[in-house]
Image 1 (cartoon, helix red, strand yellow):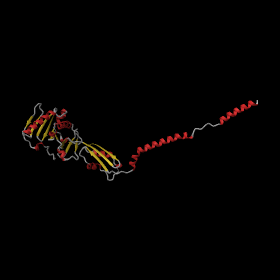
Image 2: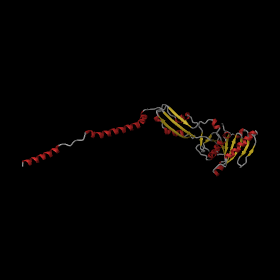
Image 3: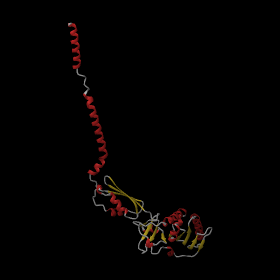
Image 4: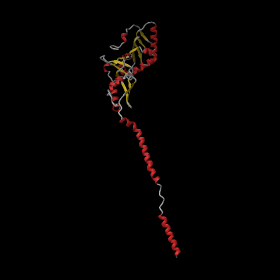
Length: 298
């Protein structure tokens, strides 16, 4: 009896002892490693964000006065005109320059197509302008102003173009000058420019002596194109072209002028190239004054 009791009691003791023994705890280092990784990750993110905004913060925090204006254009406008339009104050900070307002002010000039104004830190304002290129000109009805056309027929006032350059831009006659105003677009100019540009490529030395073009605006409005173009030049009072086959007509013109030079018959009164396979020539000496536009002032 005593032996059995001792066995039971020993088994109970062993069970109790096994329950009382605590389980092995996880190392504290594993518990701390996850918050540490997260903390390092957040520090890295904040550092990258700081690096990305640091230049902007530096610009806003440190004053930079405008010390230089970088200016470029494809035309005749100059730095003096730009400064006059922008009216920047002396010792003005670069951050205080309203680039959109500067752009708007420069675009008010009809000669300007587009403007790009930007701040270039630490102290430079960059201004880039794209201008209209004049291809023809017309005198106002009162004779006091000369308006210019670009290749699309847009009417604008010239700024900074020298008298020498203006003198080589051909006049256009046949348009209602009293209806011409800045900002208008005259469609027939586009047709005229296509012809003029083709002639310049084919016979550049010849076109240099062309002083004006005469067009029929009414015929253009009815037909949608210029059926005839008259050119007035130094050597010929009037040269008449018809629409189409311009290369053939230009070859005829060069032949006639070369022959007339050899015979000392220049200047000629008229050359009509509108009849196929023929060219009508009217000889006669004409004063140079007859081929100049009236009251050019140039």
